[in-house]
Length: 290
Image 1 (cartoon, rainbow, N blue to C red):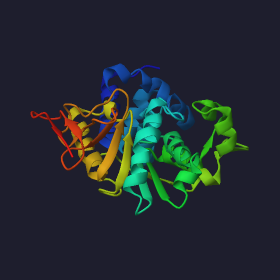
Image 2 (cartoon, one colour; image 1 turned 180 degrees about the vertical axis):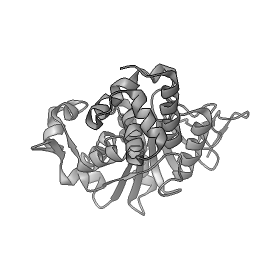
Image 3 (tube, rainbow, N blue to C red; image 1 turned 30 degrees about the vertical axis):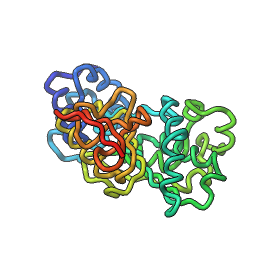
Image 4 (cartoon, rainbow, N blue to C red; image 1 turned 30 degrees about the horizontal axis):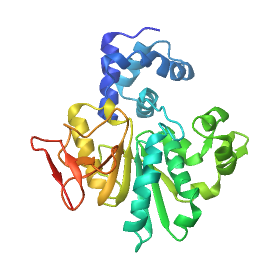
């Protein structure tokens, strides 16, 4: 199944307009694979025929399904395990001290795909019941894809999916076998909620999140969209909160609002104030100290 250059450009434009993500030339090989199932389902013979239908603008629901099919939804439990160890070792113990009065923690997983990252975060708390007894933990997962959010809300994963990143003990402890695979236990689901949200829109709770995760999302954005995304992420963070990005992502050269936490490499904090950060986003480079 072939697609013309003009049709490829139209799809790339649709994806970027709806989500901010770029479908670069190096990723356009995915088009045929990503859309083949949708074409079969709708009885559409070719990709160019699909483009014709989209251009006519008579089926907005089809446009949304095309966009969602083109998104990269790769994720798994405890992906790149080290970041979760960093949260458990550094961020959460510090929050336990800083939030001792309110006994409330808010976390946002932006671009959560089908939810494995969110449930992984919930396990960090569920595995330490004595530490977090009496605390209110709110974990929000959001994604631009309605289909992904629906999957995440269901908390149901295939045998293959639960085995990616989870040991057998974790799987048995926090998931229950069901006709569709394995479903997250109610105790794990309790602090979690999901919503459809575009990262480029204002955040769900400005200034309210102690930890914001946005991993392996920004690398697909153009420079201007990435700058806007950093604005949104920074505005979502509590003054003493953290941002965690994917392994191939950084704030360096991208924004002046965030700097590396000099006490915990891999985490970023708002610059200024009484938080120690190394600021490299703009022309000035300095360290703000307590």
